Image 1 (cartoon, one colour):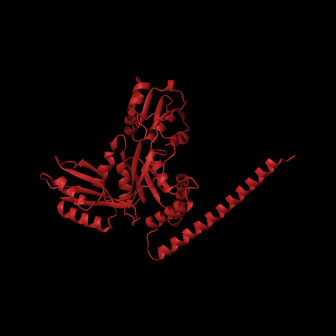
Image 2 (image 1 turned 45 degrees about the horizontal axis):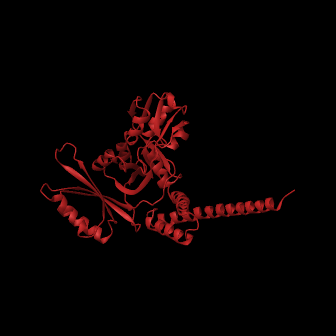
Image 3 (image 1 turned 60 degrees about the horizontal axis):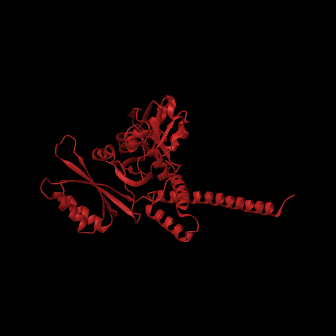
Length: 367
């Protein structure tokens, strides 16, 4: 006998099914519209990616939502929809530091969604080479961590390669200790990339004081080693657990919470203005007192907000350094253009690395 409550439950479930079917119908229609836009753009030789248009979509959705649907999930849902539709216009291939299930892989999926094609590359330098030689459309590389600082191999690769920064992504990092059995007593060696090992050094020292550690190319390689050798544990992502059929030993062993890694998307051409952009430069200074202060004054006098400055030694030239600078604004903005023209006159070396949309403020799930 059907109760009134059961009947009401069935009615609501039927309504949910109707809504889902409507969603599916509209998603198919949206995909067709995106393909039509791609065709029209191709006829006029226009770029498939329009960051300003995407920014308008997110702003409109958040405004019309009026905070009724949780904003972070709303942006995540539409991010997947928008990237899937955009990639239907032109399929892209993205290189990341492999193998599968590294944090770089996760950052790529967060940026492009699941519809892009992803290619695992062995080293960061090789990612730059693949992009420079047009073997992939984009690469995604880590550049700095909120705990350990800059990823120097990425910065050094910018000094040797002719690529452009096309975007940025921030990934909240949770380091997990994983192995084949899930039993901490089976661990004879802990392996991971050097950055996770450094970010978990205090935990490892306290909890596994007699267990040696080994640095490898990536967290994905570490997970592979743990899958093959049951005495090895890896510090890796939750995606690695699923990919390599490992077990969680301890979740979240990083020494400090709020651990975030910034990734840069590299390609051959920077995108058009989105309305909320950053610009990255690589500068060399004239060898004289006050050169750095005078360089920064060019930005300060124009009220340009500099968000990062980092120096790296020039290989093979003792005492010489290049400076990486990030600032708010797009190269096409009048004030940024003016500042860059002045910097070209003032600096011994000037390279515009790219202008690109600032990362959307969306939290990640477990990494």
